[in-house]
Amino acid sequence: MPPVFRFAPSPNGFLHLGHAYSALLNFERARETGGRLLLRIEDIDATRCRPDYESAIYHDLAWLGISWETPARRQSEHLADYRAALQKLSALGLVYPAFESRAEIARLVAAREVDGPWPHDPDGAPLYPGDAKLLSAGEREQLMTSGAPYALRLDMVAASRRVAGLTWNELGAGPDGERGIVPARPEAWGDVILARKETPTSYHLSVVVDDALQGVSEIVRGQDLFHATSVHRLLQVLLGLPEPAYRHHALIRDGEGRKLSKSSRSTGLRDLRAAGATPASIRRSVGLG
Ligand code: GLU
Image (cartoon, rainbow, N blue to C red; front, top):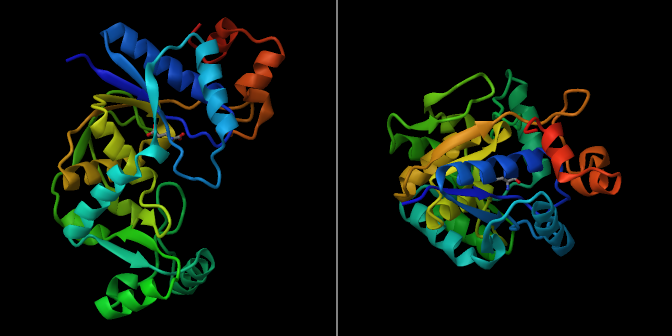
């Protein structure tokens, strides 16, 4: 079976040099190995994703000389797949609804920090500080039927208890040079959100479901997602999904050493193109000359 690669951008802004680097690496790995390259549009966040950003993705990738199998998979068209995975995790007793708003969470964290530092996840966000896990079935039922918004969270303690010696095979490198068989530490993320009342999925859930459904065998993506791989491995094991290999690559940074953002115009592919950049000059500027 030929290896399967994917580039999986979110259409919530225009692609920049970092995306070009990631897409080109995937394209080249697929060519080098006689593999397939898929494109996945990660558009589950309806409030931030826009059709014009999606068309720009197709246009920018084609301009770079990248080709992929069509049609691209659009996550918003596959909510039933994520709902099924969520139900599987619920049936294992690993999912609970939490009703706190962002502001309430911030207040709870501040209250906990009175007694000392409260743990933060690898992305720097405080771990979920609430105790919605302890609500009785009746209390949950009542809150859910009252129409209150909620997030469905993974009970990380119970989930981690079901898996032992969780690792992944890192073919690239983590931010601290981690490579080879790397231990996964999903506990560092606390009770992550798997879905919300109005959306039956989250980034973590849809990415593992799609990678498995699409038969992705090697995941080439930026080091900013290195630590998230711990959560992805945990979900793969809980859902009985196959284990892909991971190849995390260094991030392209701006002149001040900052990670690129979709709002920064100076590194956006369409602005660079308008200013005279060519596919060859883009390749050179990401070190693939
Ligand atoms: N959609 C994610 C992003 O644009 C990438 C997901 C992944 O490669 O796993 O950052």
